[in-house]
Image (cartoon, rainbow, N blue to C red; front, side, top):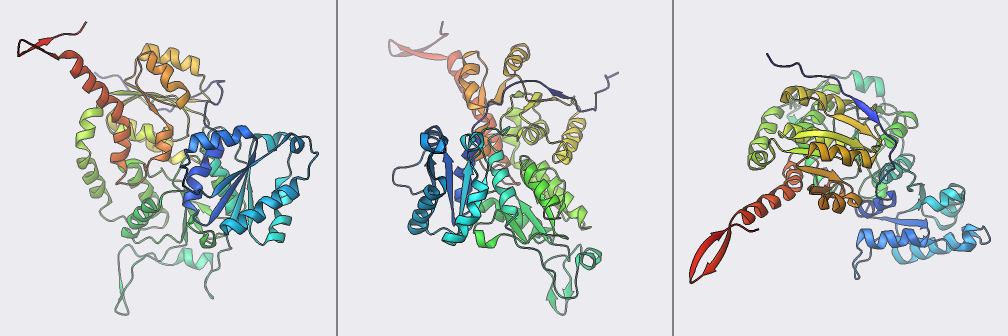
Length: 468
């Protein structure tokens, strides 16, 4: 008789520090996503050193971001901050001619109470370029929340949704939704008749196209993305517009869209892994009353294509120390792949925004007949290391600061920041996630094989010897 598996999710909270990157690192992927933008980071020389080293700017590249360094006179309020920023923004307009300038406030601007929000509207009027202020500083829980702050600010600049004459939110919502293409007046209806849908979260253009295509296969039309590739193409928001996120760290943006823009939030698992992508699409379809078409078969084909990786990870154990707020989604996917997750450390847990993801984690554990791993919010790293010594996981997914110390203790590691910068969304990216996870495992397997058998050439013959 088998023991009954506990089907409740256990949440714990420790008192550890936030060992994470600085959120101003979001500039590195956002300036590439919003092609006509310019990011101006307002901070000290330390912030500049971080940007130079962490982002690895090439000498011949011209990235669309810069550093406004605060001097001692700025910090002591002896200089005119407005005039200094005005000079910089005029130079940016002359050299780069962006459609929008985004000021990124740092820890120093918070401490000295620098009134960036007060200066931006006046300067915007003077130079004729939109200026957004985002406080993406180190007081956040995780470095990925820098994007969350920028998108929340950008949501305020999105135009209001306007429905066609004679239509309203109520009439569109009550309109019959078509679960399959219809021939109407000898023309093929490509999409179902559903309310506007906006997806929020920064993804590379190829992943945006993939997810758009997956939804189009279900006859769902995406009205826009936040952020868009160009500032002028920001989606229309407002009452009657449905929004859905693609990343777990966008809770602040979701709150802004609900409270300030009056949008309807679709709470769905995140499209990470074949299981998460299927659940994400299914949830959107269910909200619009659309029956999915061949979605389970598509997911099964992806799992079949991953068989070589699944054979390698099945039965292996992993420990998440917590860094980028992607931990729940990644743990759920790896459990579905057959891995054992001992603990999910996470800097901050937004249970409302990640409610559907937590439910999918629970269902996945029940399906795989394994206990639900405990979730530790704001973990204490000393306690985690003691637990890892006892559990001896095959892999620890951790921040860069702990990778080398853990490696010295014989624990294989993978930088969590790599999952942030890699393409991990959608059906096609599942292989990339497993490539990252299995790289240290494959390396160890190759080293073990090399250690077990060493060929030594002696007298023109090869002998096998075991190293000391």
